[in-house]
Image (cartoon, rainbow, N blue to C red):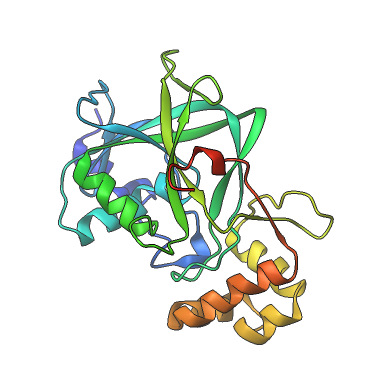
Length: 251
């Protein structure tokens, strides 16, 4: 029988946090539902979510290493249920902003009829405050706003067939990126994404260099440069809306 000692994030290959290794974004996701308990991902025998809210993860918040790093930084040790779900009505695009952490993150987009397998994290009040802060929610000019997606506009179905009345998600207030043909840019590996973005824009190369490694290093070193890169996306007409803005309470 596998012991809990064998369930460390390191032993499962889930320990690396993209906030520390941006080219790994969005980080490794679990293969099944689990309970993130410190630096271990335990089997989820029973979902207990009283006093917790469901939050859909489309990027690095589904990476246990990223979640563990965020919580540890704030001194929070309470476990987090991570539940694999079948979501209808949401797809994953690319955020129209350059993250201060050195990557260009994922962002949700409205997509009626589209089915994706995503994780729901069930967060208590302290944990939710940490994730809000990491997404810039409390700031007047943060990049994300937390929105409640109600059923049946978006369907979130658990593995046992239970359908949630809704779930929270983080909507990018900057919009999402289009590719060169005007269609939605889909997430690829971070190295490939940054390479595509740099090849396609001389202005981005002037700001961030010619390679993904240079991009990450320069972005992490200069918040002002990240803001300038974000403006380039808009000025070069690479940005469109996600369709989820109407769900944001303070939009």
